Length: 165
Image 1 (cartoon, rainbow, N blue to C red):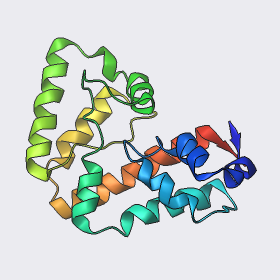
Image 2 (image 1 turned 90 degrees about the vertical axis):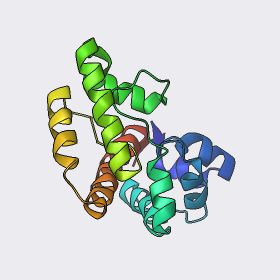
Image 3 (image 1 turned 60 degrees about the vertical axis):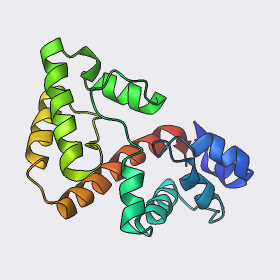
């Protein structure tokens, strides 16, 4: 773990290297947050990073959502996502379950234009499947809000794992 005081003292390159993977494939979030140091708490750092995203135009937010991997995919994904999906059992799907998730992920992407984003830590494949089915009934506006809520949960876990106050 890294001390918050160390984070606040990092160069921009060090900051991006340490925190750039917190938001999926989006090191630019850490790059933008660096200029807003010092942070008094992990929570303040997290809220700052979320605000950077939320202040973008809607089209850019949706592009940011598209940086996230599909759940239960067999494609190469980031280290954080790999561990989180393994913890939820998504790496141990039967061939039938894998196909069901793949089909639902395609349906979700077709409906909303970005992948299903879900904070899988502490969850299991059954709960994730149920959430995916339920969220397919949302409007685009509802689902964008739900995706942001889940990104906030995911990144809060990641910051908590990485930074010590």
